[in-house]
Image (cartoon, rainbow over all chains, first blue to last red; front, side, top):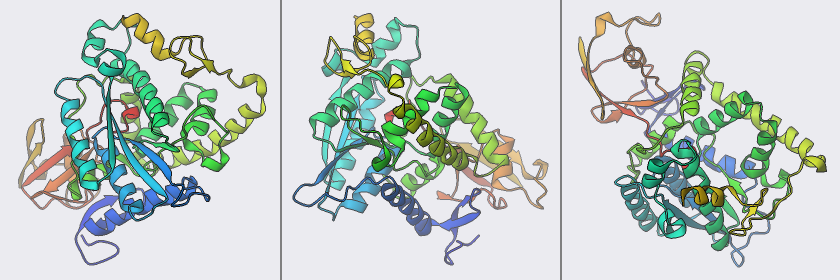
Length: 321
Length: 79
């Protein structure tokens, strides 16, 4: 089967668009989608200059998604003095797993010649995820603890590194799953928050001075295509499953989406595009209603911005103590 | 034709191509083979001689490698 755009042999078929693409045209198509998302989300401010460049911190886990995101952004902005990329890697304390993916991050950052920072739960909080899953004082899935600690460190270090933007490698499958989960849970306020936190174009988001804005420029690319891009580019992505991965509900939604996509190609794209539109509308609605807006304050323990007296991270650390 | 499907890190399957139900197509495709081993084309890549192939194409190799997608744990890990 030939590529739709040249005579070379196709390496992939995208059922949602009907396209068959060769190695070169497939990679070009991924890069185009990421760049288009960067433009649509207004990620490069008009006032960015070489004298006053923007710092973009990328959550670099060493998995395929963050490695592909870092590579495409580097290729896009390497010659643009308005944007400086920094890779931020978090070691959760998972024996034999994160050690290898940290190596992948170090290798990538060295290849691309970008600044790389490594922080760990052990140094920051005195805990390791291997021990947390053993103790499990809150009777929760490993990812529920890990997500709270990771978000805390991403925000803290993005702030310390002077980030103008915090970027993560969420792909289309991740975001369509989250959209569907929020919808099925009936969590409208979460949908509004999702828009202001990471989905909306920067120019349309409610000002959140307390937090570094987030962005997900890989979210138009299906997970399978991210993996294929990493494979074809021979990127140093780490390819072992986290031994503690255990998000049962997300797994159910993922399977549901695979089945839907099989019978109705394009379902993930349409879920996310409709969700983004609705999220923008409900974000406006929630932001107009001052009663609904959360009162932010400083955590009594660590001083981070939270809606509670003690932030979720400090509560979890207390129960783990 | 008998096809060997090696799902990396998991099982190897021997599948008789003639026994694979097709989706109205004349010949079984890579996607039909994946269906036989209960995998979605959205969670794997199919390689022939180390090269990715479009899953909607007819199977024309007796040996396939299937790579599953790997997550970096929670999506908030950013993959």
